[in-house]
Image 1 (cartoon, one colour):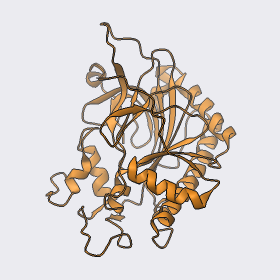
Image 2: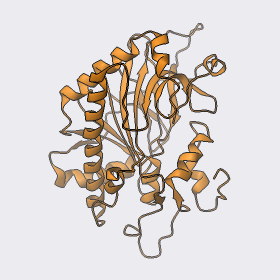
Image 3: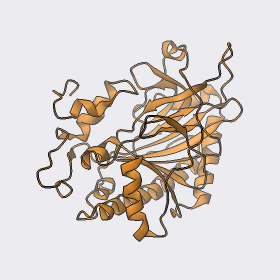
Length: 326
């Protein structure tokens, strides 16, 4: 969902944000203990919309191998990388985030299908295996969510990721070292602005360079300590709707580092484009009303192209809204 950059947008100044402390209260879920995990995941989704998983079953050789291949691509010359642009729907992009003027200190590879073609056959093979592994992880997490919420069948959410028409995205982000601004500024420069993810669930892994920040329930921002051996899970917009607001889609952003580059690999799990999205009937209490109009994933995805990165897209589908963007 990111378009190739334009000269005009590349010349826009980067946003800044205040420095914030590491947050040590991020929920850590051990997937080796599923009976405990299902309840802890639900609690984390309700409180933060964000958690970390360990003992996830994704081989570390696969993770590190793909990271090495990814850096091999980003270390190529700009002219070589541009051979894979624009990202429509897959390919290379730089600086511009979306079609409506948002910019960041970032370059990226975006894959909106199972075609992971680059100049490296090794990369393509590793990317395919990686996406298969994290999709399986996503299904496991969504089934634990269903068990924790005591809704049946437990595949009510995971089936959407397993569908052969599932509309998922795989994104590889590279944040190069960012020099200090010309004038002294105590604030951080923003590499990727604050936003929520539109899908069902996002599964992110990064190298050892910090940068990810999340918005806590009280509205303050906190830095996420990096952990290259674990995965960080975001509740996305669709999951907030399907739980009728019980889960919160987490707002997050990435700040730059002036000394080290940061690499992140994110799997965005989405349903088929025709999937109708509304609160799960099996979850609703007697007399409870839906907070949202029913919509398809195609309608919501289209909305993301018409809005800015930090816009509250769900507000357009909230009861009382007249769907001005659909």
